[in-house]
Amino acid sequence: MYLHNSSSFSRKKLRIGEFLINGKLIDQRQLDEAIEYQCIYGGKLGTCLVELGFIDEWQFAKTLSKYHNLDYVEPHELMNVPQQIIDLLPAEIAVKYQAVPYRVDKTRLFIAISESTNQQVIDALTRATRHTVIPMAMPEIRLKLALKKYYAMPLPSRFESLAARIDKHQFLTGKPGVQKQPGPAQAPTQAMPEEKESPVDTTSWPMLGDQEGPEESEELLPASYQAAQPPRQMDRGEFLKRLANIQSREQIAEILFSYLRPNLAVCALWVIREQKIIGWKNSLNSEGFEELSFPLDHQSLLGTTIISGEHQLGPLDQITENRRLAKYFAAAAPHALAIPLTVRDRIVCVLYAQDELKKLQTEQNNLVTIARKLELAFNLLILRNKIIES
Image (cartoon, rainbow, N blue to C red):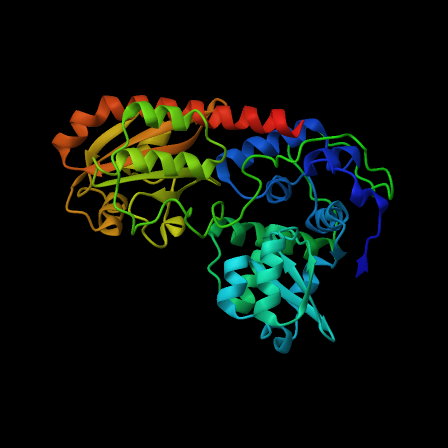
């Protein structure tokens, strides 16, 4: 472990994407693809780069520490922390702030933190542990794995799958290394130059969707979207205006449900990844929705929607996979409408509504129009992120 000491800390830092490009760890094409991936599937930019195979977890961890000018620790070492150190941070605090203690040195406690530069989080951890907290930057995937191991935090299937890939890669190579990646060859990887950070004066506005505090977490619901809040009717004008000003993928779901929730028994968004249709968000805030998935090649309302590329309206009591939906939402409404969302010429999401047949028939044209608006919102988010990051 080392503490990077650099006079560049006083400068305004480049954004992480630019920092990686300047170090020739990725190229612009890879950054653009990762931004698109992030806007559709969420997660931090580094997670998306690792998931796409553009950078190795170990390589990104080292770069992230240099970028934030913080302590560096090998990612796998975070998975072997003594229990007496883990016990210094209560589970509820660890999960809330996405933090895992690593080692203790007298009154100093080194902690890997998702928001490693957030002073309020550091202060909260200091109070909780009664130690002087020394923050460490750590890639999102390794931090979530550690939270699952030590504090039993549920891990979405996306991270389970990525962790299995990383473990397999490291087992086959015997050491950290760059993963084989699809498509055109990437720019050659090399060590980051030690003191060549650009003095370009960039703004302090972070990449949209890249700051995952409580409002962006994949496990925690946005603070402005809680089941305890009574639904408020949003008119169409407000809905469209807010959708045109979204700054993260989570806001797309939040705004959509605020608009549709008063009129429909159930509405939900699904994402398509790894030949599966996977739950993203639903208007009931139902637990475990992210773990609900359907294979693309199985007959179901959702599967038919993806294969045909057309919206589907039908009953939920005739096919096993459809009955799983009806049972999950525990709704008396026996019919559902599924509408595909196409972004960058491929279906990436499905807008789903469940209610009585007559209600769905009445709302069908409106929901198809809304789906087209959501496609525009995704494309707008991608363009904004590319403008800001480039």
